[in-house]
Length: 66
Image (tube, rainbow, N blue to C red; front, side, top):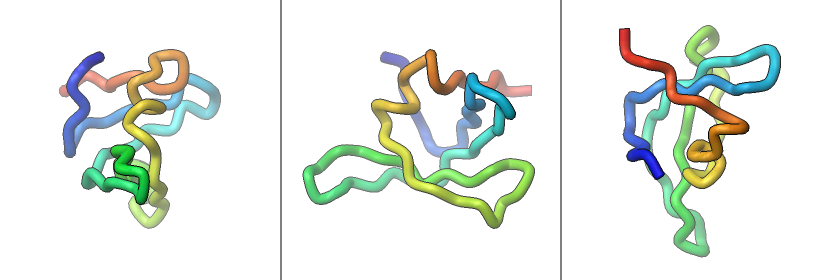
C-alpha cells in the first residue's frame, strides 16, 4: 500500500473525476484511520473518507505533483 499523507491530492476515478486534497488524519471510534479532505475546485466542500478507500486504486488515484 502506498503512503497516504496530508497535502496529497487524489482524484476520483469515476466521473466527474473530482480532485480532493488531504487535510488531516482522523481516527474514528474503532481506531480506523480516515482523512478529512476538501474539494480542490470548491474548498468549502469537505468530507471524511477512510484511508482504505483512498488506497483503493479503483476508486481514487494519486495526482502527481506538478
